[in-house]
Length: 70
Image 1 (cartoon, one colour):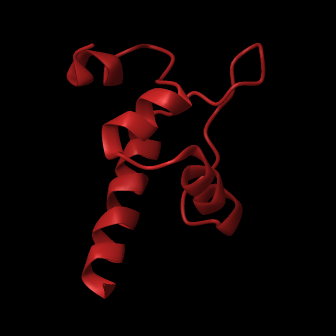
Image 2 (image 1 turned 45 degrees about the horizontal axis):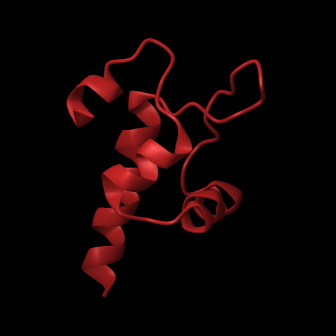
Image 3 (image 1 turned 180 degrees about the horizontal axis):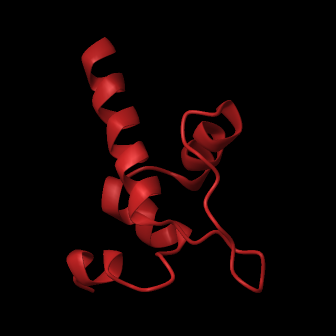
């Protein structure tokens, strides 16, 4: 799947796609959400997370910040 096209979807991208995009685990992604490092994504009719461009930008910032610390 083309990563650029997946971000252009009208309703966002799912958790597995975000994890694959950044090579992080679901547990890490959910922990960042619980800790308030990223805002909670909107959810679909099944109550599944659908990450928007804003969420993806927040994740990028967290990853960049963590690389600077390590």
